Length: 528
Ligand code: G4P
Image (cartoon, rainbow, N blue to C red; front, side, top):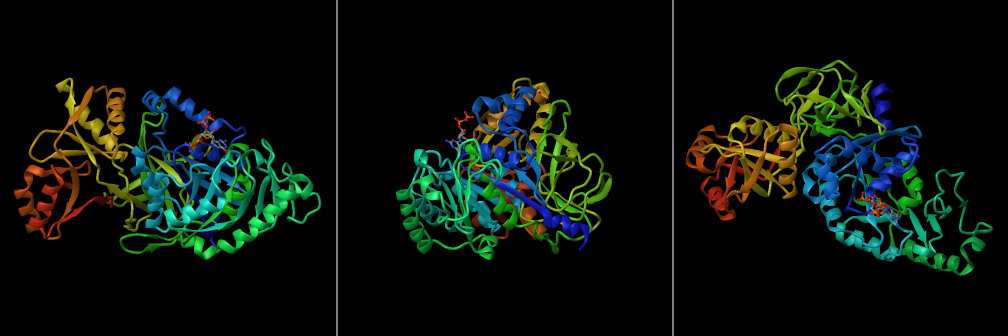
């Protein structure tokens, strides 16, 4: 087997999806801890705080108590290399999250035992479904009183439309929490807050019949548990690897992230069963991860991550081959050769210069505005990866300068912020307005803050009569020109110079569509 194939098989690249407050940050931290990537719990949150301290615009993030940035964390576990792609938690930053989900091979869904399936989880699940992403489920906060486990599984099945296969099952909950049973191995893991860092540090009974267990959890609880398990096994589905990999079944674990409880059982199962990097579609062919030549695509761009560097970093997911510093690649969209010299990898501790990267890994490429979200890179062959969407924004504002002489800086700032993908920038064909589109109102505050902080421009965002935007496509150049002339008042160019129809009302959009049947109006732009 080739090196590339071997390295690809070792990779597990995934993201955690959850509703805010379900415990994603805590679980991330515990996973890193089990992976040996960090020494002490508290450092993920600590790291967040340190970033706030060094970066002014993130003070806004701190004020709002939400996470604006996503990061990539790599850690070894057993024979595997795990890449955890963090997703921002706040609903306003949905697009960024969606695109992160295009770069993973599987996802982990965290659900709060008391709250069950929440609104944001439903949305994220819809995105996973688009690509049939395999999903494991962790039901968290078992140390608190919550809903009946059976009821929660029912809710996941009916609301999220995915079959549940419980792999562990809780013994009690809240104050009565005694542990979990592993339904496949039969082992019983007792709950001991603050412990459970290793198997040696945990109390594990090989089965429900093991001597001593009844004394530990009580005769009557054990009897109840046996009854319950009979019911569960009759009513639920056994774990089926193929169904999981096809995205139709989710293995379910119970635990308490903050108490390290149930986390290692989840991680061990994840390493064993979660998919390694999968083949990926391009506009011309499917690319297999084991192919020797490097390919990848950019799913995220972040400006000024570190004020010391003042850089913009493009996050590229490696799809095949091997990255090494200085490798010459084709930047497919521009057709130009690009030497990737100082790429970064994202170790949990800090960013470091990448020595090598393999399929499933993410590297950070320094960028001065030439790279856009969705761009593909390859070692020669012009391959364009598909499926990285740009969503139509739902809110629009016109940027107004306090100092009109700063127009150039404003344009530069808006263009660069749009490259990150959280906002989109439109220039109408017939006016000098600069219009910013976003999926959430908070993004306008972030944009204003960052324009001032990073570009020295004071701008306000005021209402503008745009209800929705559609990217316009037409095969027939003549018909497109005709459409352009007739509708110039409502047309604009986005940051990548693509034609966009800015509709003042939904009715107007409908009429425009009816009048131009040859023109396609798309709510997403595939950044190809
Ligand atoms: P998020 O990233 O999904 O938003 O969630 P996060 O991990 O920040 O957790 C949200 C809150 O839930 C935190 O409390 C966290 O301590 C708590 N939590 C996480 N896992 C568990 C668990 O297993 N059991 C219990 N009881 N609580 C848990 P907080 O008070 O908001 O923050 P903090 O003061 O602990 O930092």
